[in-house]
Amino acid sequence: MPTIAEKIASALTHKDQGNAAFKQGSIQQALRSYHLSVLGLSGLETEMTGMPMMAAASQQGQNAPVTDEQKKQIKTQLAIVYANMAACHLKNQNWKRAIETATTALKHDETNTKAKFRRAQAKIQEGNLTSALQDLEALDQKDAAVKAELQKIKQKEKEAEQKQRKQMGGFLSRGRVGSDNEDEATTTSAAATSTTKAPGSPSSGAGSSSGKPGSTKSKPTLASKLGSSSTRRKTTPSYKDDEYIPSSTWSGTAPKIQELQDGEE
Image (tube, rainbow, N blue to C red; front, top):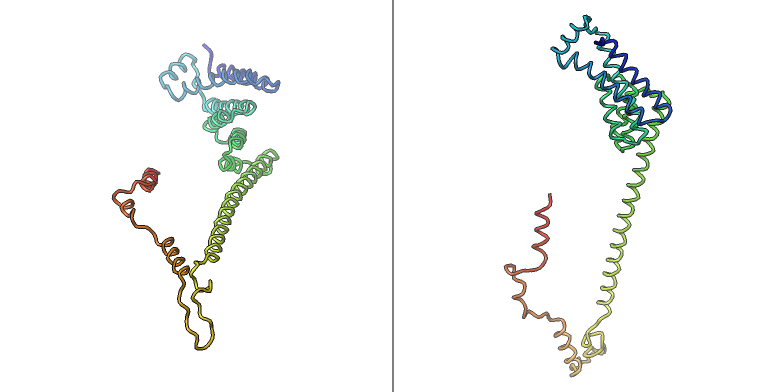
């Protein structure tokens, strides 16, 4: 039965094979090798922490207990392998899986800077700039790779701000056009009202005073009476349809609008 040391060595062999495949550009082969490495190391971790009875039986068969150094090595190597898997997912532009594997790596070893860096890279691509910035701020700000990712965040924030300004400018522009049209319509209506005069108005000259001392007002003519009567008939509203708009029988659009307002959350 293989010892703990031999099992660790076998798992690390798969990790090395994954590294070689990654350098050659064989991302899928690298992921398969990393997966085998994770299976081997995770099995050892389960024996040591999750199943005490199995761990005791395993140790009795091997006549050698798992040392604290081996426990630390297993957790560290698991973090490295998961971080390497995150690099593969970045190559495949699978941002979600890159974030997941990098996060798993950090659960095994929170000091793994590559896992945190690669998680930040994936978050930037997903648009989660605030969370990506938090990961990068925990790293060395003088590192060239970190600086490059920070610059990407600044550029994306700038682009988002410009896009927002452009959208707001379009909204404001449409608002101004509507306001200008309303002003123009109001002005036109006022001008039309001011220029329309009734036939029997004083400015038309009918029935006006001569302006000379002692003169008397002329009697209104038949034409002016007819014009004045016509004007009154046109401007006097008709109330014969009052029964159409009592509040108890209104069937217009107001109730529908109220229903929509009540339904909004």
